[in-house]
Image 1 (cartoon, one colour):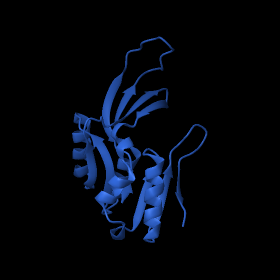
Image 2: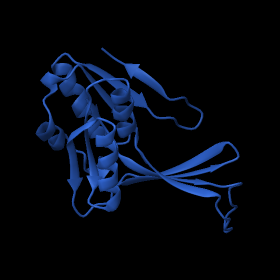
Image 3: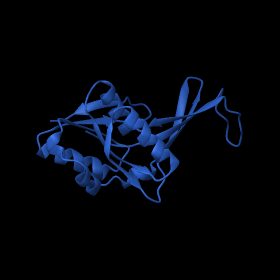
Image 4: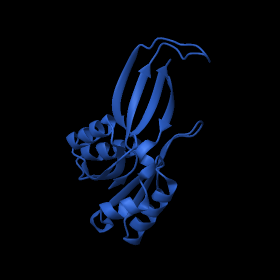
Length: 172
């Protein structure tokens, strides 16, 4: 099981970053399903695992498209809830000169609270729980503690911050 973020990544490729106050023409824009939680779930499904995702999307066109993509990848999305009157999470990714900058708007991901987890899935049925830090920290801690009470393995993916590498941590 993966509990985590689901975002629409809007990737803008450009020759160079603009300076403050400047407008530059973009080379290309792409809309790609993403979010660390969704990416983990898709990776597991592609490796042949039975994987369920607990998350939240908005009631916008991105939400529908994100769910469609997850289903096409073989991810069980019965634990993904559509949050009314909220936009789906979005990551604006600017790419230039083999580097990038990212702005994340968490949107419906902020609605992923412990009560939603309890309503979606039984921890007794899973082997491993995967988490990351693009959802509320209270939810991450709640899910990890709950999984451990059932003797399940918990993997936490720490996202990259400037000067630090992303890594997987398992704590028994």
